Image 1 (tube, rainbow, N blue to C red):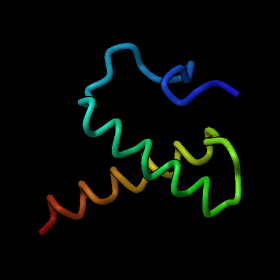
Image 2 (cartoon, rainbow, N blue to C red):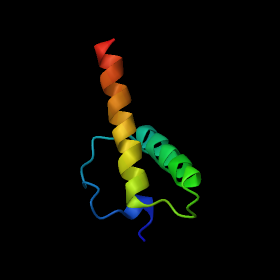
Image 3 (cartoon, rainbow, N blue to C red):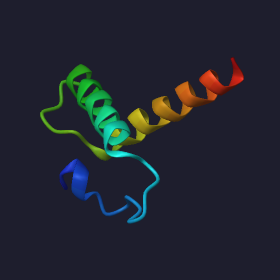
Length: 62
């Protein structure tokens, strides 16, 4: 398993700022903890990114 920061599918020129990326990693770590996993998997990162995108859309709609 690749570390989260070395995920091969992460775009090289990402629009995410370091703080936002760190927040996504924190959420992914929490999701992995809830899943009783010792490592953060791709599914945890995908779900964390999905949650982040959904919260941004909700903020724009309000």
